[in-house]
Length: 434
Image (cartoon, rainbow, N blue to C red):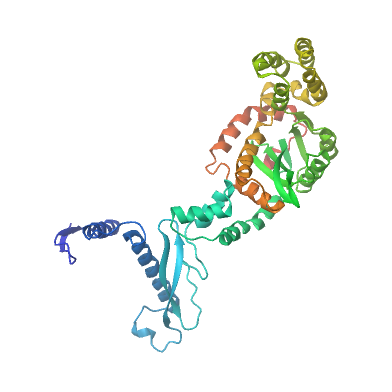
C-alpha cells in the first residue's frame, strides 16, 4: 500500500512513500540529493551535502544522548525543576574519514555530568582515523608524510605531534604482546635478524631479532621482536632470546631453523637440549651464487640440487664432492662455505620428505623480513631503538588481516605435522593439550 505526499520544497513533484522504514530513509536521502543538484550544490567537498548530513547526524545523535542522560526531551514539561538541565552548546571540530573536518555543536548540561558516546569528551577524530595512521606508519611513512597525506586526501589537518601520539599509544600494547605466554611445544621455530639504521650518537646498523613459531596445530605466530646490540648478529644474544621464550612457557622445540650463524647451535641446545638446529638451505644456495659469476648460476643450481634433495647424508656428501671437483678450483670459497655449514645442513636429510619440505629454508621468516625491510627502507633511519621496534610491531600487527595466509600455511603443514606425530611420538603432548 502506498500514498502520495506533496513535496513541500522547491521541487513541485511527488514522491512515493513506502511503508518500509529503510525505504523511507532512502527516499528522503534521494530527495535531498535531487534538491542539492537542482540548486547547483556539491555533494562532496567542504560545503557539500555529505558534510552537512554528517554534521546533522552527529548533532542529532548528541541531542538524543543528552535527552537520555537527563531523562526528558528538549522543551519537555517534565524537565522543569528537576535539577540538572540543558546548558547551551559549544563548538567543536572533529576529523572524519569520509568528509574530513566537520564543525559540530555539542550540547552541555548544567551539572557537567553528560559524557557523550558518539563524540566523546576531548575526542577529535572519528571513525578509523587512528587505524589509518597506524597502517600508514607501518608501511613506512614518516609522521610528516602522514600529516601531509591527511591534508591532501581528506582536507584535514592532523599535526605531526598528533600522529606521534597515536603511534606512541601502541607501545603499551607492544610490550604486552612481547611478554605474552606462549605454547609449551612448537614443531619449529624459525629465527633470523634484520639490520635497521638507528641514530645512537651517529646513525649505524643495528640488528633486530625476530622469531616465528609453528605450533602442533600448524598455526604460525610471530613470537617476539628484540633490539640487539652492536653492529652484527650474535649467537650470545640469541641465547638470551631463546631463554626468554623458555621463560614465557616454551618447554620443547623439535626444530630451530636458522641461517647458519657461528655458535648458534650451541646457544640453541643450551636452552632446548632436544632441539635439532637446521641451517637454511636457501641461505647456502644464495651464498654459493654470491661467490660465482652470474653466467654460471644455472649450471651451479643444477649441480647443487642433488645435494639438498639427496636421500641420505651419505648421498648428499657424494654429490657435494662432485660439486667440489667441478667448481672448487674456479671458486674455492664455495666448497669452503658448504663444509663449514655441513653439520647443521644435514639433519633434515634424516627425516620424511614432508618434514624436509617445510624445514629446508627460512622462507617463512624471510617473507616477514621482506615486509620489515620495506617499512624501514621507506623511513631511512630511526631516532631511537623504540621507534624502530614500534614500526616493526605495527608491520607484524598488519600481517594477514583476513587470515587467508594462515589458512594456506596450516594446509601446507598438515602432512608434516602427521610425520612429526610419528617421529616425535614420545615428545608429543596429549591430544587434549594441543
